Image 1 (cartoon, helix red, strand yellow):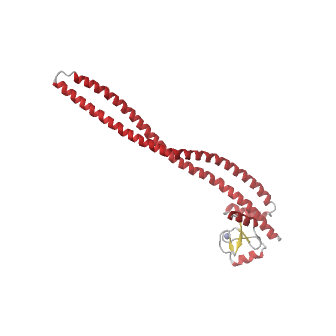
Image 2 (cartoon, protein in one colour):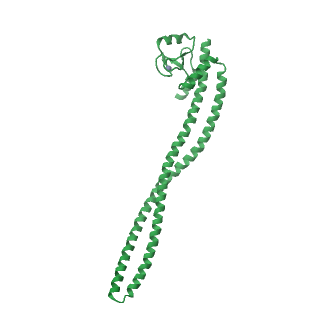
Image 3 (spheres, protein in one colour):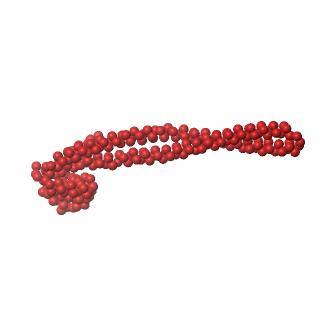
Length: 253
Ligand SMILES: [Zn+2]
Protein backbone atom coordinates (compact mmCIF):
# COMPACT_ATOMS: atom_id res chain seq x y z
CA UNK A 1 0.00 0.00 0.00
CA UNK A 2 1.35 3.41 -0.92
CA UNK A 3 2.02 5.95 1.78
CA UNK A 4 -0.76 8.11 0.35
CA UNK A 5 -3.36 5.33 0.60
CA UNK A 6 -2.14 4.45 4.10
CA UNK A 7 -2.69 8.04 5.22
CA UNK A 8 -6.18 8.07 3.69
CA UNK A 9 -6.93 4.81 5.52
CA UNK A 10 -5.77 6.31 8.82
CA UNK A 11 -7.79 9.48 8.29
CA UNK A 12 -10.92 7.49 7.42
CA UNK A 13 -10.42 5.39 10.57
CA UNK A 14 -10.14 8.60 12.59
CA UNK A 15 -13.26 9.88 10.84
CA UNK A 16 -15.18 6.80 12.03
CA UNK A 17 -14.26 7.52 15.64
CA UNK A 18 -15.29 11.12 15.09
CA UNK A 19 -18.61 9.94 13.59
CA UNK A 20 -19.24 8.25 16.93
CA UNK A 21 -18.22 11.37 18.86
CA UNK A 22 -20.44 13.51 16.64
CA UNK A 23 -23.44 11.23 17.26
CA UNK A 24 -22.88 11.31 21.03
CA UNK A 25 -22.51 15.09 21.01
CA UNK A 26 -25.77 15.43 19.08
CA UNK A 27 -27.46 13.22 21.63
CA UNK A 28 -26.02 15.26 24.51
CA UNK A 29 -27.35 18.36 22.81
CA UNK A 30 -30.78 17.04 21.81
CA UNK A 31 -31.84 14.85 24.74
CA UNK A 32 -32.44 17.80 27.11
CA UNK A 33 -34.51 19.47 24.37
CA UNK A 34 -36.96 16.54 24.29
CA UNK A 35 -37.46 16.79 28.04
CA UNK A 36 -37.81 20.57 27.81
CA UNK A 37 -40.54 20.18 25.21
CA UNK A 38 -42.38 17.74 27.47
CA UNK A 39 -41.91 20.14 30.37
CA UNK A 40 -43.43 22.93 28.32
CA UNK A 41 -46.47 20.78 27.47
CA UNK A 42 -46.90 19.74 31.09
CA UNK A 43 -46.66 23.30 32.38
CA UNK A 44 -49.32 24.48 29.94
CA UNK A 45 -51.66 21.71 31.08
CA UNK A 46 -50.81 22.24 34.73
CA UNK A 47 -51.62 25.95 34.46
CA UNK A 48 -54.98 25.09 32.88
CA UNK A 49 -55.66 22.64 35.69
CA UNK A 50 -54.72 25.21 38.35
CA UNK A 51 -57.18 27.63 36.76
CA UNK A 52 -60.00 25.09 37.07
CA UNK A 53 -59.04 24.29 40.67
CA UNK A 54 -59.08 27.98 41.45
CA UNK A 55 -62.54 28.39 39.90
CA UNK A 56 -63.87 25.45 41.89
CA UNK A 57 -62.47 26.89 45.10
CA UNK A 58 -64.03 30.24 44.32
CA UNK A 59 -67.40 28.57 43.63
CA UNK A 60 -67.18 26.68 46.92
CA UNK A 61 -66.63 29.93 48.78
CA UNK A 62 -69.54 31.57 47.02
CA UNK A 63 -71.70 28.58 47.89
CA UNK A 64 -70.72 28.78 51.56
CA UNK A 65 -71.55 32.48 51.63
CA UNK A 66 -74.94 31.82 50.00
CA UNK A 67 -75.75 28.95 52.40
CA UNK A 68 -75.11 31.27 55.33
CA UNK A 69 -77.32 33.92 53.73
CA UNK A 70 -80.13 31.44 53.16
CA UNK A 71 -79.97 30.25 56.75
CA UNK A 72 -80.17 33.84 57.91
CA UNK A 73 -83.11 34.51 55.57
CA UNK A 74 -85.00 31.60 57.07
CA UNK A 75 -84.67 32.86 60.62
CA UNK A 76 -85.59 36.40 59.58
CA UNK A 77 -88.56 35.07 57.65
CA UNK A 78 -89.91 33.20 60.60
CA UNK A 79 -89.52 36.18 62.93
CA UNK A 80 -91.24 38.34 60.33
CA UNK A 81 -94.07 35.84 60.16
CA UNK A 82 -94.37 35.98 63.96
CA UNK A 83 -94.54 39.76 63.76
CA UNK A 84 -97.30 39.54 61.17
CA UNK A 85 -99.34 37.29 63.43
CA UNK A 86 -99.05 39.86 66.18
CA UNK A 87 -100.11 42.80 63.98
CA UNK A 88 -102.62 44.92 65.86
CA UNK A 89 -103.98 47.00 62.99
CA UNK A 90 -104.12 47.00 59.21
CA UNK A 91 -101.18 49.46 58.91
CA UNK A 92 -98.90 47.14 60.84
CA UNK A 93 -100.31 44.20 58.95
CA UNK A 94 -99.66 45.78 55.53
CA UNK A 95 -96.13 46.74 56.52
CA UNK A 96 -95.52 43.21 57.69
CA UNK A 97 -96.81 41.77 54.42
CA UNK A 98 -94.51 44.06 52.42
CA UNK A 99 -91.55 43.04 54.56
CA UNK A 100 -92.41 39.40 54.14
CA UNK A 101 -92.75 39.74 50.37
CA UNK A 102 -89.43 41.49 50.01
CA UNK A 103 -87.76 38.83 52.14
CA UNK A 104 -89.30 36.06 50.10
CA UNK A 105 -88.09 37.73 46.91
CA UNK A 106 -84.57 38.00 48.30
CA UNK A 107 -84.65 34.41 49.41
CA UNK A 108 -85.86 33.25 45.97
CA UNK A 109 -83.01 35.16 44.33
CA UNK A 110 -80.52 33.45 46.60
CA UNK A 111 -82.00 30.03 45.85
CA UNK A 112 -81.72 30.72 42.13
CA UNK A 113 -78.14 31.86 42.54
CA UNK A 114 -77.35 28.74 44.49
CA UNK A 115 -78.84 26.52 41.77
CA UNK A 116 -76.80 28.32 39.10
CA UNK A 117 -73.65 27.91 41.21
CA UNK A 118 -74.29 24.19 41.56
CA UNK A 119 -74.56 23.83 37.79
CA UNK A 120 -71.36 25.83 37.26
CA UNK A 121 -69.50 23.84 39.89
CA UNK A 122 -70.62 20.53 38.39
CA UNK A 123 -69.41 21.66 34.99
CA UNK A 124 -66.01 22.76 36.35
CA UNK A 125 -65.65 19.49 38.24
CA UNK A 126 -66.42 17.66 35.02
CA UNK A 127 -63.70 19.71 33.26
CA UNK A 128 -61.26 18.73 35.97
CA UNK A 129 -62.18 15.05 35.73
CA UNK A 130 -61.84 15.01 31.97
CA UNK A 131 -58.28 16.42 32.05
CA UNK A 132 -57.09 14.60 35.16
CA UNK A 133 -56.06 11.40 33.34
CA UNK A 134 -54.02 13.28 30.70
CA UNK A 135 -52.50 15.50 33.35
CA UNK A 136 -51.27 12.69 35.56
CA UNK A 137 -50.06 10.68 32.58
CA UNK A 138 -48.01 13.63 31.36
CA UNK A 139 -46.72 14.25 34.87
CA UNK A 140 -45.54 10.64 35.22
CA UNK A 141 -43.99 10.68 31.77
CA UNK A 142 -42.11 13.85 32.59
CA UNK A 143 -40.79 12.40 35.84
CA UNK A 144 -39.62 9.19 34.19
CA UNK A 145 -38.09 11.10 31.27
CA UNK A 146 -36.20 13.34 33.67
CA UNK A 147 -34.74 10.28 35.36
CA UNK A 148 -34.11 8.64 32.03
CA UNK A 149 -32.35 11.77 30.78
CA UNK A 150 -29.91 11.73 33.67
CA UNK A 151 -29.05 8.10 32.93
CA UNK A 152 -28.75 8.74 29.21
CA UNK A 153 -26.52 11.76 29.72
CA UNK A 154 -24.29 9.80 32.08
CA UNK A 155 -24.07 6.94 29.55
CA UNK A 156 -23.30 9.40 26.74
CA UNK A 157 -20.57 11.05 28.79
CA UNK A 158 -19.02 7.67 29.46
CA UNK A 159 -19.18 6.74 25.79
CA UNK A 160 -17.65 10.07 24.86
CA UNK A 161 -14.75 9.42 27.19
CA UNK A 162 -14.19 5.98 25.65
CA UNK A 163 -14.29 7.44 22.15
CA UNK A 164 -11.80 10.16 23.08
CA UNK A 165 -9.44 7.45 24.31
CA UNK A 166 -9.95 5.46 21.12
CA UNK A 167 -9.36 8.65 19.16
CA UNK A 168 -5.97 9.32 20.66
CA UNK A 169 -5.01 5.72 19.83
CA UNK A 170 -6.17 6.00 16.23
CA UNK A 171 -4.51 9.36 15.61
CA UNK A 172 -1.03 8.43 16.92
CA UNK A 173 0.00 6.89 13.58
CA UNK A 174 -1.00 9.93 11.51
CA UNK A 175 1.84 12.33 10.54
CA UNK A 176 1.34 15.56 12.44
CA UNK A 177 0.96 17.95 9.44
CA UNK A 178 -1.82 15.71 8.07
CA UNK A 179 -3.46 15.42 11.48
CA UNK A 180 -3.25 19.20 11.96
CA UNK A 181 -5.00 19.72 8.65
CA UNK A 182 -7.70 17.26 9.66
CA UNK A 183 -8.20 18.91 13.06
CA UNK A 184 -8.33 22.36 11.47
CA UNK A 185 -11.23 21.29 9.26
CA UNK A 186 -12.91 19.38 12.10
CA UNK A 187 -12.91 22.44 14.33
CA UNK A 188 -14.14 24.89 11.71
CA UNK A 189 -16.30 23.09 9.18
CA UNK A 190 -19.25 20.79 9.27
CA UNK A 191 -19.03 17.06 9.96
CA UNK A 192 -17.54 14.90 8.35
CA UNK A 193 -13.95 15.94 7.58
CA UNK A 194 -12.87 13.39 4.96
CA UNK A 195 -15.17 12.08 2.22
CA UNK A 196 -14.85 9.93 -0.90
CA UNK A 197 -15.31 11.34 -4.40
CA UNK A 198 -17.72 9.10 -6.30
CA UNK A 199 -18.42 9.54 -10.02
CA UNK A 200 -16.50 12.81 -9.93
CA UNK A 201 -18.73 14.23 -7.21
CA UNK A 202 -17.69 15.18 -3.65
CA UNK A 203 -19.95 13.14 -1.33
CA UNK A 204 -19.62 15.83 1.34
CA UNK A 205 -21.24 18.69 -0.59
CA UNK A 206 -22.55 16.79 -3.66
CA UNK A 207 -20.85 19.14 -6.09
CA UNK A 208 -18.73 17.93 -9.01
CA UNK A 209 -14.96 18.21 -8.58
CA UNK A 210 -13.32 20.44 -11.25
CA UNK A 211 -11.60 18.27 -13.93
CA UNK A 212 -8.04 19.36 -13.07
CA UNK A 213 -8.53 18.61 -9.36
CA UNK A 214 -10.06 15.25 -10.27
CA UNK A 215 -7.03 14.38 -12.40
CA UNK A 216 -4.72 15.30 -9.47
CA UNK A 217 -6.89 13.26 -7.13
CA UNK A 218 -6.63 10.17 -9.35
CA UNK A 219 -2.87 10.53 -9.34
CA UNK A 220 -2.98 9.80 -5.62
CA UNK A 221 0.16 11.56 -4.49
CA UNK A 222 -1.04 14.19 -2.06
CA UNK A 223 -4.10 14.73 0.09
CA UNK A 224 -6.47 17.20 -1.58
CA UNK A 225 -9.42 19.28 -0.43
CA UNK A 226 -12.76 19.76 -2.16
CA UNK A 227 -12.57 23.28 -3.70
CA UNK A 228 -16.22 23.79 -2.79
CA UNK A 229 -16.62 22.56 0.82
CA UNK A 230 -12.93 22.34 1.80
CA UNK A 231 -13.31 18.80 3.15
CA UNK A 232 -10.46 16.35 2.60
CA UNK A 233 -11.27 14.12 -0.37
CA UNK A 234 -10.07 10.80 -1.79
CA UNK A 235 -11.01 8.86 -4.87
CA UNK A 236 -13.44 6.01 -4.13
CA UNK A 237 -11.40 3.74 -6.48
CA UNK A 238 -8.28 4.24 -4.41
CA UNK A 239 -9.80 3.27 -1.13
CA UNK A 240 -12.99 1.44 -0.21
CA UNK A 241 -14.41 2.53 3.12
CA UNK A 242 -15.58 -0.93 4.15
CA UNK A 243 -16.64 0.14 7.64
CA UNK A 244 -18.95 2.77 6.15
CA UNK A 245 -20.50 0.37 3.61
CA UNK A 246 -21.05 -2.19 6.38
CA UNK A 247 -22.81 0.49 8.44
CA UNK A 248 -24.99 1.37 5.46
CA UNK A 249 -25.91 -2.29 4.95
CA UNK A 250 -26.73 -2.66 8.64
CA UNK A 251 -28.90 0.46 8.51
CA UNK A 252 -30.69 -0.79 5.39
CA UNK A 253 -31.58 -4.15 6.96
ZN1 LIG B 1 -17.21 19.08 -1.23
